[in-house]
Image (cartoon, rainbow, N blue to C red):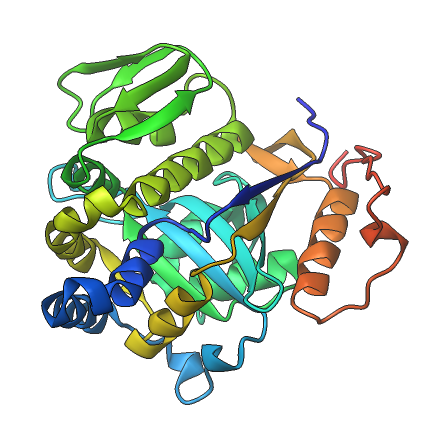
Length: 337
């Protein structure tokens, strides 16, 4: 199965999942009081976990230089008791606070790639990197795949999406496809019809997680759809009163190396001017390795998106591929055939 690389642009407020809730809480403190500020700081402090490689080397967001964030969604809960979690979602973002632009791409969980650990090197699905060494292994694996640095990370338990959506009173989503899937505990069904509707936490999580209705790439697009809907609801001033309970959920379900001051600086840039988002989708194909079905990102598509990400971080110079009229079309040539 082959898909064409697509680039989608849209005007939205600055958002990326749960982090925007923290940023909004910080920038709302002048109106809603010191209690919310204290709760937000406690949440961030509780969630903070620096990678060993980054001790004393992180860049400051106060300078408003472009930077990148890797969002990781893991699918392991005490109820499911999987023991060894893998990433169910990988979303790489570059953010330019001066230009108010965000570039983002979802990496299919079954992407065939190289994973290096201290003990050995694996050739397998990229979502296995988290099982081998959590963020310490996943971050460099993504950096190698995209040829782009990860400045910060944020890891969320997928179960937190369910709780956050419910704490916010549900979200509005234009569901792209009709489907039926099992619920979180596997003891019931979730049925959603195509079209715009109000979703509960269980329904939103089913939309983001289901793997039976399309493919890995489309699944990444649906995950971004849910993230945007959560952030949109969070930015509704009517949701401010739910922030305390939402922050409590985030604190239990998030790890990040963004500090309190980092998110405060980030929140300040979100005020006033909206951000322009550019979303990329890889050209890809199915590939069978050792009798296992995986996803191959076609090399020319990977190189093109890597270039765009690196330009957004000011690591590469812009060229003809960055002109508005330029349209990339993959040759769809596989390196495994």
